Length: 242
Ligand SMILES: C[S@@+](CC[C@H](N)C(=O)[O-])C[C@H]1O[C@@H](n2cnc3c(N)ncnc32)[C@H](O)[C@@H]1O
Image 1: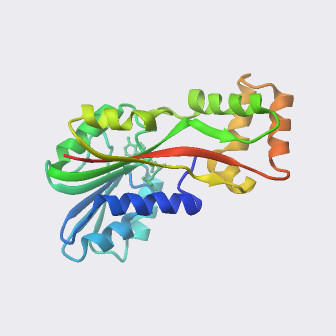
Image 2 (image 1 turned 45 degrees about the vertical axis):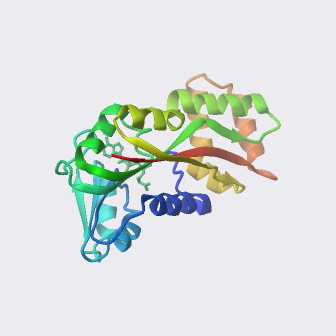
């Protein structure tokens, strides 16, 4: 759900994240929760032939896709594992990124402690998470848009408001905060937003669970598909050092 990397805004914040990591040739970079391997090629390019990129994910389908994508990249190694117990040697990583993973995990503080464990002193770490309280969907029925956002934060995403807490959690995890920046992906296309934000799917769940009235929820969704569309939310990027 909430496939927030789609579209131009997705590409822009990822490029910014990798730029802010300030990777130099020969370094070891970790992509914790690498998903389908979207960022592995960019990391491989930065570390160069003498560097190393480790992608870790726990989902077999994601690992298969990441392996397929990085098959031609000899510096990339994909490992199956959990971010609560990273299969990576202590103090072996120079640069690490974790992009939209903490919002899903059981224990974000434990995952950050693992990142601390595997990174070297002086390493730079980039964290990105959304804050789903910032999800706004334009509709004449403002109450239902608000109810949809409340349902998303309360029932769809495990750690839905972790974005705003990211710098505090990283600080509590022993990292030094270098910078915090935000990005606001804007959706003007209904189909893209429906796919990325789960408008129809999550609204149906909200109706089925009696969180939103069926008639109102259906009308809200149908009206969104007609005419001008606007939705946005905020992604928070925290760059810190070990
Ligand atoms: C929204 S995707 C983001 C993928 C990737 N970071 C990106 O930016 O394209 C979240 C990923 O986190 C992974 N994930 C969630 N919880 C995890 C955990 N405890 N350990 C390892 N991976 C996890 C999922 O399998 C999924 O691939």
